[in-house]
Image (cartoon, rainbow, N blue to C red; front, side, top):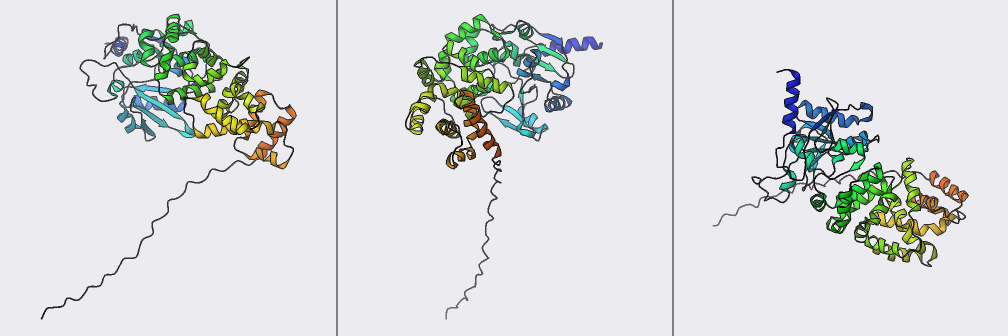
Length: 433
């Protein structure tokens, strides 16, 4: 058989579903040549893909990186999907760590804390599968087509074949990229209750990438927004910080607020927001500009700006700022469980605003520049424009002069002191008379 026939057979075989396809999912395989310049691809991700392929495993780049490249954006992360099982991935890479119980994944660790996530093709369960174990349904392995059908949105189910330079599409994601549309794979009435975090993800992608949300999907997102309360607090917290770091936080959070989803994520915040005379996302929009300009901002600073509209009155109009902020902060952030370090930094940033706005006039005030939260406090003064530019410039100079705190070397375990061997003397045996 010629090469063209071999390729057609390979494509047909690859497009076949090993697991059952839900009736509301339409599978139509399309393979479109669309080679990307390797300069826009992550070098470590390419090494991972090529090594897996070298050992005979079907492997592709998948998800957000393919979507962003097609939309003309530079991806932040490059994820890999493969036919190799998690244990087989670990056997090929010394820098591999297997994580997760619900969804077994391989994390490959590289320099500068970079992680390439490698997942195995998953499929839907069949009647013959043993689902007695707790997370069996999430770790059933299948084909690339099965895996694409299990993903959330069509634009996130695209795969890229590095070797051939082709885009692989089973769910109509390429058409939705052209239409700049976010559409669920399958019926939204089934897919959103499966994982209500998809409501937040859809809004995040729409805000960040300038996409429109499919009408049927959007209607179901409003209807199912209360299901967000069933999600784990850890996942909601992770998604909230992803939004704040996105550079489009103000627009995204406003959309979540308009559809009623934000009230289920942070009911205390939304309750305090409703009592404000003229609530505004203006400060968060300024932070979005900072992020888009490449400014380095911390999670604690992002949280401080996000909560600032409902905390502003306590920061400036209360006699005992520290006590007022400490008492008001917890009800505003419930039920999300932020780390103690984040909350301590937010409190210190708020409490320091009154002293910093007057400028570094005396020795005691200048010591604020030595504190760990000094940079975040100065950034908040900049965002809220409470301090004159001259005062803000003085604080910037003082903060930049502070020596960077060296990281403490890990404590070496103390060697166990060995006791000298005890010499035992034999008691002479006394023979009986």
